[in-house]
Image 1 (tube, one colour):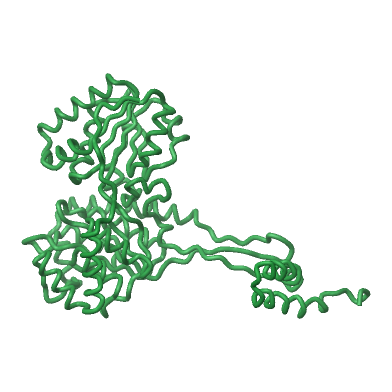
Image 2: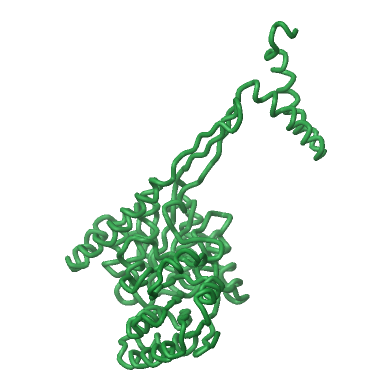
Length: 430
């Protein structure tokens, strides 16, 4: 293995200053409700409307301001997300199985009642994020989705974002950002019913608020700065590889940008190509910072080492620009979403193709996938048994309980054994 460019990548970590600030805000917001919401919204966003929630007329007015081409494209993207979520749901079947005579076990999938969806703003109006949390929730059967999106300085809100949120199926829309938005959805504050799950990406304060609110409600996942890793062999096109690396670099100065290849010649070509494209990239101010600080190019000695490097990194987005695609798809295990072949790219997954873009970062892909329709379902188990089975299982259970010194537990089994043992004996054995 050889490192051509070694950039660091800041993982998602809590820092004491952020943690303490968010903790104080959440305590204040829970205690003082909407008054605290307004205070923080004025302080951080210079935003204090008479009502943070948009009316049906305001939502319709926002749609009227959106270009028809954007509306049609949003419909295309959202339909793809909806179709994929519907297909995913079809794989989640109820279960009923006889594991032994008289013992029937099963599970069923029950949607949570309510979801709080956060659609980020900030540097870019990421209205494509609306469908990623709202549509899977609605397909899963969630009855109520409250959505929050931060205000846009000088514009109140971005009309395409409001349209996308509405078209995705949100039941209520609030123009409110950051920690106050998370608190409103989690606590309810007499405005909405407290949600069961908070979902959506945001800055470090939003992520920290989700972390601290977990337990009060569920969360989708904790996400840090975005990441891309590209695996490329010598058949790949350096121009395309460089373009895809920079596509993620424009997100944030802390974006993780990594290439793993199989020859130093190819790695150097990609390095030169990235520098060349940066010269004319419209968002080079951000992308150049990200590439300088976090860009990484590694030359592996073999495909086996490529897989080892990638699985250790566990990237949010993983692209394959290789001739032998099956070799990698069959062996790679740690990634948020996999883009197989140069015909697809991260932007397709982020915006339009139908898979979800709320994905694990900071090596969390080792233990979780991203948001999908199943995120909004509770898989609950059930059991039923005959009297004969209750007697059989009860005898074993009572012995197990006594071995653990849990005598009250044992008595619940004993009572059933005593109650039904005589009833189940054959007449000739009495």
